[in-house]
Image (cartoon, rainbow, N blue to C red; front, side, top):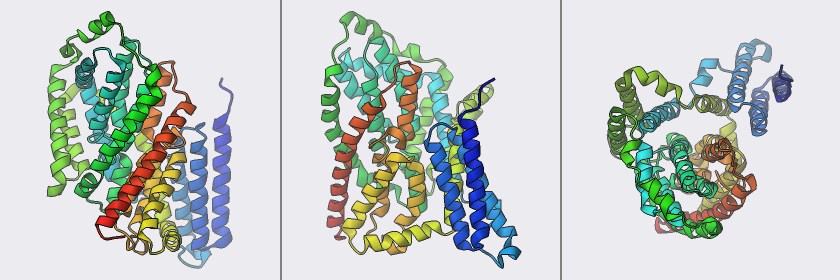
Length: 473
């Protein structure tokens, strides 16, 4: 029998957190006490998650359940407290979950599962890798361009689930160290997703909270994304240049002589997956003009693919990243509790005096501070908490570019200082560990921080330049 370890410590921590939160509620018997209780649960939940010793999905769901209990106690305890102090029923808390984002993630996971099972991505990867003819540097550049391109149409986790396994397979076949490829792809994936509403889950969360226009996001950040890629490529090539070489001709010929069509595992799935992705791209590009939001487009295509899959539908559903889905349910519930109790409004009110009426300072502030927070926390909670602040009248009146600054910040913050800020980074780290050739944590920190600082500086200057041309500064 397994000896109790972190599970028991976590359970004790949860019990203490709950007791402290309820005690604060009864001690103050006011909205202030309720706010303190919610803060205790929010911080306690994330401290336990940040240890990486407990299951983050379980902790997230447990956290929202506890905060729901506290809000319920505040509601039913009104006779004791002498009136309403802001408590609500559990269904009100659940209504604050970003269900459209949850649906989008599930739908995209289904589409990626069907396409991956058909061999579509393997087919594409072999086609583009063949252009390198065994030259490591050329293969490196090719994969980075591939990742940068698909990051516009898939969220960062889906992008790395597509690209990373293919990268490992081809690098193994050509006897190349895959770790420089994976680290670089994760970083490129994060910043290449900035112009696209569907490129990263934080983008969807921020756009939903701030009503950010899809076209404005793309037009504003696509040039910046290209600039960041052009700046990053020479740095990455210099950083990893010593690991590159050229695979022996006979081995490269043996790998690339393989007919890409042999990668197709199921012709029917392959054809419908290719068609679905074409319609997905068209839907994401043109849908918003007709009121078709990305979650709706993705859900229509995912449902159609499952219908056509028939007997294999359950197999594809089992491949959905349900732990991530339920983690987000808990996360959004916790952030919803902050909103219900007025804590997000209070945070906005406290930031407003700091920002003042200086548009330049406000822009830089909402680039660097969220980026730093995203470095140590998952960029999703940072996005969910700060998005309402970006459109708070007391702050947004200074400059309308704050939602854009926040989108940029949380994506860049995903790889600065630590790889913990973005789920895409954890995907590549997990895959490297599965191959028994793990990416050194410090290696990711070094190159990620170097590029992150450079990107934040460039992005800040870029947004200030836009502010100048718009007459905001």
